[in-house]
Picture: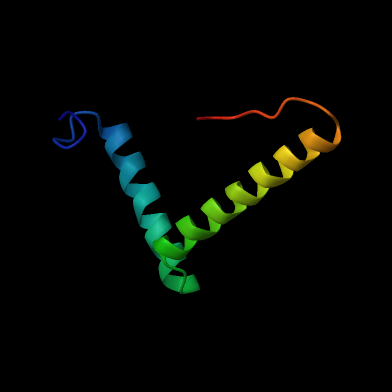
Length: 66
């Protein structure tokens, strides 16, 4: 509530600046938030797959998160 009511001005201005910068970057590049999230998840999935395959090749235990 303090941020919304501008009682903590530094934090509120920081959040506003980051939000405005992100909006400008997305607007200028033509990139959407959905495509960014999809690409990040695809990259994460690829890294986890390669990690598991490397663990199998090196006879090490793979890390499972669930």
